[in-house]
Image (cartoon, rainbow, N blue to C red; front, side, top):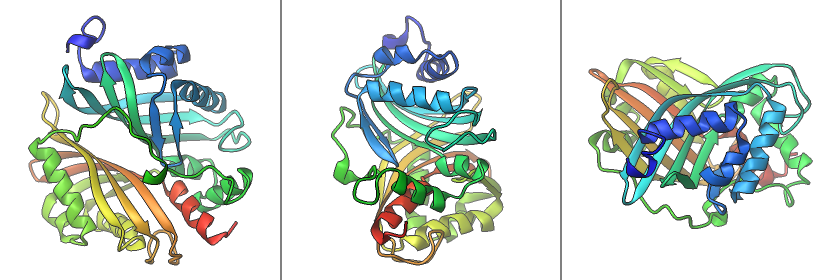
Length: 324
């Protein structure tokens, strides 16, 4: 890996080390180098342009959770020296809410959630990014509910017309990364599983998942085996039964000492026109950014991690209904 060879031995080493340096060593100033000056960062809750906004946001988060830790679970990547790399980085992050900020006055409560970031890397600089953290998981562990938290955000930000608009293609910008991942069989297999579920073929879970699968979903939700995994995916799809599903990016990898893995970034775009995990249908136009990581074993898909942001989905619904 020539661009990183002076300091890092691989893409995962680079991603894990700069994450530790920025967050746990408090090296916020290093973002002036590690992030391109005009980097687009897409979160379910908004879009942010430029590394200075990233630095300020990181500072605010550390002030709210001063003991925050970010432990890397996996880095699933594609690309080459010539074209650059795309890293899909899954991490477990934890901290104690001892400062005021985005999540309100300090509660003194501790949280532990997952986040996934897709980062485009050229040389040793990230110039394009998509990121989801399990905001609903933090909210619930701090003693709140995602729907009410979304309602409070809208009111705090000035009402439905003035509040920060959740991310959607309508407010996206074109970034430098144009790749779609790779054609590895495990990425293709996971894309097919997700596509079949979104086409309402939920029999795919019993056909492709290990019966002892462990499934991790938003709001720090952990379930096991087929029926509860079906329930989680049906709850999402039934809320948006006619929305368009799209695979935005797919990676598959096989690496020494690791199971075959896949990292998929996907989206749902349409209307809240069904009963499901978001309650009574409202007709609200909703965009869902999603990530799924998977590990495969001898009996099928053995571990799945999926993230989307219920808080931002509730925000889009409440902005439409005016229920604040």
